[in-house]
Image 1 (spheres, rainbow, N blue to C red):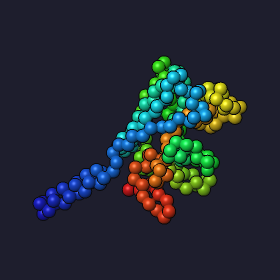
Image 2: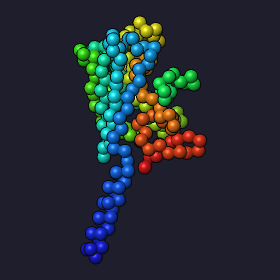
Image 3: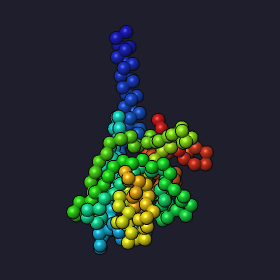
Image 4: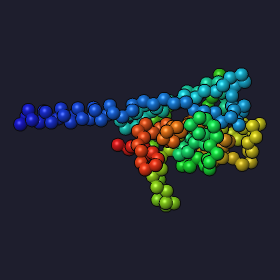
Length: 208
C-alpha cells in the first residue's frame, strides 16, 4: 500500500512538473514609439527603446520595463490594454477605433538621464482580464502593454490638444500614447498571450 501511494505521489509530482514546463516561463518584447509624438519624448539625436520582460510566477507574474533615451524627468502612465493601434510591422492600423479595455498598472518617471527601470507584480501572462456584468462586458483580455504621457502639455508641441486629454492617468487627464506593444503577425494577439490557440478563423489564448 505504501509503495503504491509513493508511486502515485511521484506520478502526480512529475505531471505537475511537465505541465509547468510546458508553459512559457518568460517572454521578452519591445514597445514601439508612436511616430507622431516621438519628438516630444525622444532625446535629441537618439531613438527611444523600451524592453519588457515578463516572468511567470506561481501566484502572480513579474513585469520589468526598461526604457532608454527618453527625455529626462518626464512622467508617464503604464497600462495593459486590449488593443494596439499599430500593426505587426509597426505601422498605424487603418481600422483602429479604440484601445478597448485598459488597466492602470504603474506610474513611470524618467530619471535625469532619460532612463526608466520599473517592476510590477500582478496577473499578466495568458490570463489577465477584466469584466463588468453591469455593462454587459464579458471577460476581456488586456494582452498589450503601453504607456501614455501623464501631462498633456508635454505632447502639445507634437500636435496634441491638451484641452482634449485622454483618460490614461489617475486624474483621467493624460496625454497621448507614447509607446505600445505590437500584435503578433499570425495570431493578432498581444505579447502577454504566450499560448495562442486557433479557434474558428481567429486565435484565442489558451487559459490552461
